[in-house]
Image 1 (cartoon, rainbow, N blue to C red):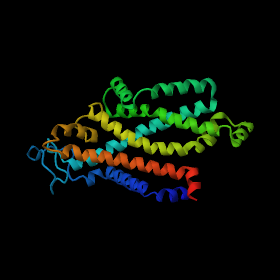
Image 2 (cartoon, helix red, strand yellow; image 1 turned 180 degrees about the vertical axis):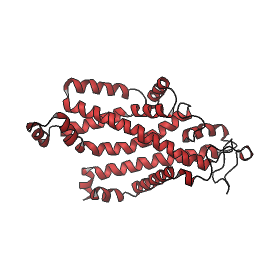
Image 3 (spheres, rainbow, N blue to C red; image 1 turned 180 degrees about the horizontal axis):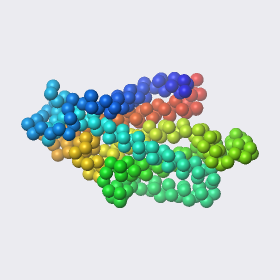
Image 4 (cartoon, helix red, strand yellow; image 1 turned 60 degrees about the horizontal axis):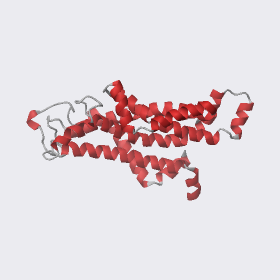
Length: 279
């Protein structure tokens, strides 16, 4: 871990991403304390007010404080990221490890299933799932989790294929250890590095997917302080009140950028080849 941290902190851009993610997480945790106003409170007399000392990022068409809604929107984005990526990680890892370890017809069936899911564009597949399940935050997280499951399945399968014939795996089999224990105690821990990197990258994709689906009206309810909802509402006021859409857009951009650069930094720190080159 010390070696990984040493390699990671040498990447200044990755460290910037880690700091920004820490800020987003902290703001989500202390949102009731940090937000200057109630994100749901409407004030007709302050509608479409520009950035000022009273409202640092202005107000929307209902007089709701943009900064407060962005802070509370961080909770929605992180919640969607954690749960949807968790679904993808667990389901995809199980599929990939089982397919690669048993091989033959099991690998063929599961690999063809993931190939079929890969043939659909991410947003289109999410739209189909949301149309079946119906619009809600829970269904949104399930849809995004299903969409990104094949990515984790393919990564896990590739990792297992490279180590399933290692000597320590053959030794475990010769000792009579069950297949489930071999996969859980020996194969999975040695396959986690690329999966950890993919988790950070998938967080960025999940935030984008939530914003896109909410923008289209298939995500959370319209009054919820979601970045996608704020973008959808702000697009109608771009000429007269640009701040309604611009500031949520900046929040989405910074969150996605931070997770992407942190994922790149983790990939470099966990890649043995890059470590050997730097040493």
